[in-house]
Image 1: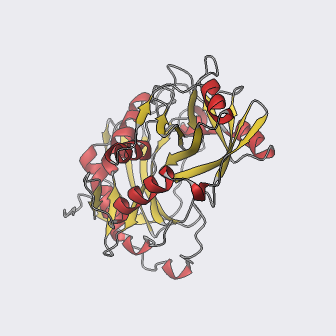
Image 2: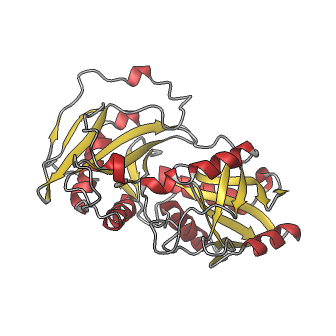
Image 3: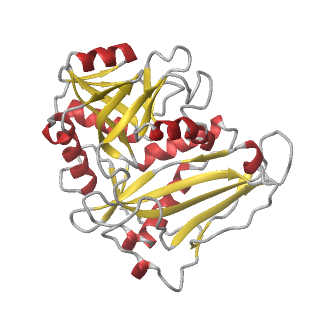
Length: 355
């Protein structure tokens, strides 16, 4: 339990919006909790932060984020535990990745203790917003943007760091159909693919839209050099069960090192499931589909959690997978990980941080 007196001011809303929310029918990312954290950076230092009622803030049209794209974010969750308490799930990994993204985008890092303090205070203040449904959680969105009012290409000298939260249900309502993308590129070696930089997602929207017009829900990206190796999905890391072995493409500077990916791999190894972390080619994927060696395929991510793939498209050919209800390994992993996150299964890895 994090028990500290906040080093920042808290301005609590006079009127909660809780009674306006239908918690049994939550659309992902549309409902926002009562408060947000906000902190500014200037003159080479972070100023005193504050928690205030959620709402818009004013920025100059010349703010550099609008012109040169200095913007990073994270996604994490807090869960209602089986005993009614609220816990953050592995926030330290998200904080470390946020700061790694900041360095790559030439932005100032956030002191880890301050980041954690802000997270805990905000979630504790809005703990009544944490839902308790089977697919429900409090989604937490920290982000940083360049706010210097200047038109000229250089790193900003002013930044805003903020955290807001959303009670959410499932990101995807069911299994997803995915297309292996071999024309467009998400990230290149030496680029920003390992960072949660806003521009990475903007560049993926057009090919993702084309895929949806073809009847797919998401893309599986391939490497930029040869389009030969599987990298990740648009909102998830990709994993495959081939001949009973869980295969996960190894991370690199073009693949996001996902917290859920790390958690799933850790749980799988603990359960005795064979795991291979290696390069996985499009050819090998297609061969494993043709000879029925691939029995389960899924994406993993904070927003999506663990999401089965019902169909994989490769070079114009569509491969339907067996009904996920009949799978063995993915449901096992989901039950185990979800139980740990919600406190119904022993947290043997010490991942949950009560607030």
